Length: 322
Image (cartoon, rainbow, N blue to C red; front, side, top):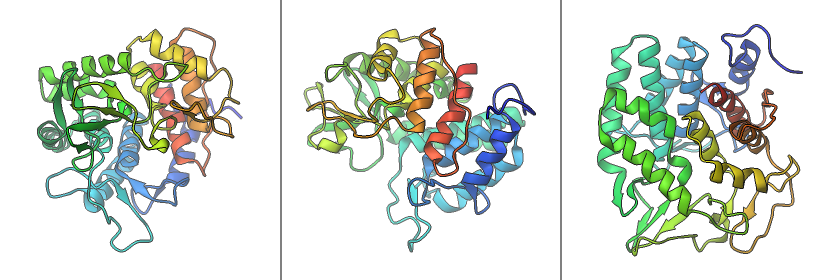
């Protein structure tokens, strides 16, 4: 069933949004990761805020933001990365996840502009200042984003995640904080992508290491050497920002010739998953085809047991519209 009627606007249908809310927004604003033990994390809260703005649901936005403030925001205004429903305390690890911080900030900026709320813009500016001062480092490739404040720098080596370069957010940041840094982050992200070509398909990995000699490599841990579920967001952010990078997009299209392609590929030993693409990857596969100017069919179904896939389904619809 294609949900194409009763649209809140011309991107996401009312049916889609109501199905998403029913499945994933609980406890007065908590975005529930139904595929991961019903946890919540800062990334999911940020995505929920952005989607709420996109469908003009101010009530949902306020609930999500208030829950996030109450349950995840630290004294320094960044956010704990994961909240467990069945643990005491609910947040046993108060390290942050920078992509979550950045998505929340972007959602606040979009909401402040849509609903003319200067308080949300001020909240965003405070968080953004903290991100700039504690989570952006200088490298030979330009500024780079630390995935979190703790655990990603060791003996001069830095672990990076290219899906943390949220390209379409940088323009919004520059609107409330004019700074050459945001353009430089776009440039550094594209530079790192151009150099992150591993395995026979020349693909970027979920995680990579910037060594002390400024050379890029793969982590030693096998589970971190994959082209898997993190890096699927790179085409999302490229296409959403209107950035044309045919080389990167073509590598995705090549490794995903069909929805039955393996869900992950180890970029060192070439081992592949024994199961096909998940919903999140199938949605991005169609987006990649669109961005390459090929025939595509965007996914529109919400699956109540797949938070990540359903979220990327809706986000790809926004990216297609830019």
